[in-house]
Image (cartoon, rainbow, N blue to C red; front, top):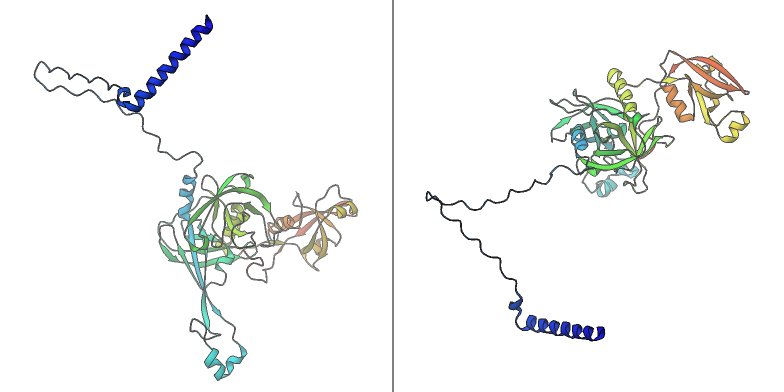
Length: 407
């Protein structure tokens, strides 16, 4: 019985499906949907007034036009007006070939492609960036940006231009201060690089390749980078925000648009950004800037020792409790350390109560001492701790000019 009913059902379904297929093929309009019934017009009003059309439904809420979460446009807006482009030029005399003394040789080979005589002076142009740090027109930048420049022109983000004069420079940190004279100058707000952490979002602002003011995004990749050979005093913030030639002297800012550092150098084999850039911390830059503005130069402490890094083997041989301190490899005769009793072979472990980790940090600690003051040192000598007091001297000015390392 059930089999008989199933057979009838299947045959009926097959026939219906066949009929629907024929109708859909031959008379598809038969299957069109019936239009909705027309709405009857509203009856006329008793007073003969024209009836109002049916009310239209109110529009829903307007979509939020605010910036998406994760945008750093506000930080960029705060910092960009204080970041400037710097254009410098200087006179460079090209070397002259000794055969130029021969009139015949000079007649045929005495001109270059520009029509200038070989050996004649010409102008060399370069570019960089800077950060306005006060409404009085002081601009912080890298020393190598303005080194030996005869003319310095500053371009603000609002397209105003001004000639700048050099206030002073410090090649040992690769920092310099220049000054412009314009009204209503925007100044950046200093941040707190000592509170920065690896992974914090940062923006790099500058003038890469001279294309104009540019903002790039990255994070703090590392803190306290030193012994890179970029400058004498190093305590760099490392970032992967794209930094290219022309960014030197520009700003590294935090997510609030506050200055964290001055972009200084990159690690690259091609000259373009490889994701490893270095910035001088803003607190270190501010200390240098304040001294340059007040006295035109930077004064640092000096005790006259030649440090050597302590390895694990040396730490074991000198019976140090842990791998710390620096070995005194040499002492300048009649220098502050020599007069205080420091001897070659001593291990300097503390400066003013602060443990010494390596030669770079030791150099920074001693440089912070005030010349003429008494500094407290602790050294390890033959396994025993010895406390000493040294009269701090004034660090001599560097003999070199500019940086040894290339950006």
